[in-house]
Length: 415
Ligand code: ATP
Image 1 (cartoon, helix red, strand yellow):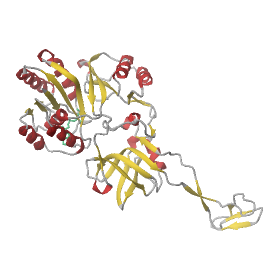
Image 2: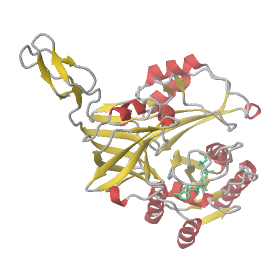
Image 3: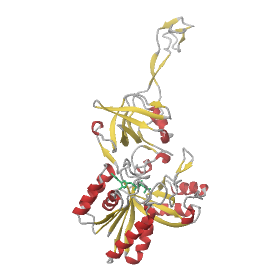
Image 4: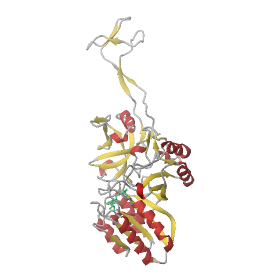
């Protein structure tokens, strides 16, 4: 049986991953969990997400199907925050994962879907499901069950004791830096070096104490052992599509649609323009099609890379499109144009640089008594190199593939 769950939490608390963790425990006597449970991130532009648009699925072998359904339903009813205005739980229990369900997942991670599309497919496939309130969670629950993961990473989530929920988290900061030093690059995004921050623990009232992301299970466990914190009530190692760019579509600039995420190729036509609040924008063009790219203030030090871009630079940009603007997650500099600046011309006799002869009066060489009317253009060095640059861990989208995972490419990880 493939069990999918989504949309059980609200801004005030709880967490669908926690519900799945509790449910797996309760199902132990009824069967055997096969493989790892899955933490599936869906389209990051979905409107009704609480935080990171996560849905959960796991596989259980059991010959007590009715009891499994009953336990799943009771747990969902008990551990969902029904009072949340935007909490619309969905529970899906399928006997098999069909190609149509896998296709539904791929759409859910890249497009915006309607609840009726989920209900329609569930009915067509004869799958058992329950949707509560608006039943929007059926979209995520079905997508999580259908998720095929050609690429995947892991996240170990540690949960808090219930009496501590809503109180400040007690985690020894130094131990987190130590865990990172011991296990990076096999784990990533626990800390943000540039911004001197610990980024693996939420600040919300939910049951999550922290999450360790990585590609290598022993390294994740080593990091977990290293962290000193308040007691961990339980922990679960999820297999996940986080850090895989599963949301990214290929597209020519002219065909991008809002609420979808792309890799686009083009040429920078103007230097980045800042607006109030520290946000930066620049236009990217290809074949007379143009898109505005944005590096918002929360992307912090990534903006210093964007500030260095110049007209003529050829890039690939990665990010989600909102209101016609692509919100950058990373860029790949394919070619840097020659940087030029204006400078005083050299004296034709002695070769030394001339000096200004006064406002609007050109340049002169005092010694040789030569004059020139205007400045000359000269090449200047560029601080950037070709290759990939990314937003720092504190601004990372769950689905974005971090550069630490890109083998054989020219990368400049934010670290
Ligand atoms: P958390 O990260 O705390 O679990 P969340 O950000 O995952 O919260 P949810 O409470 O799960 O947010 O709400 C997201 C809602 O959006 C769910 O009902 C889910 O079914 C729905 N959804 C997910 N993907 C899409 C999509 N591609 N199109 C439309 N709706 C979607």
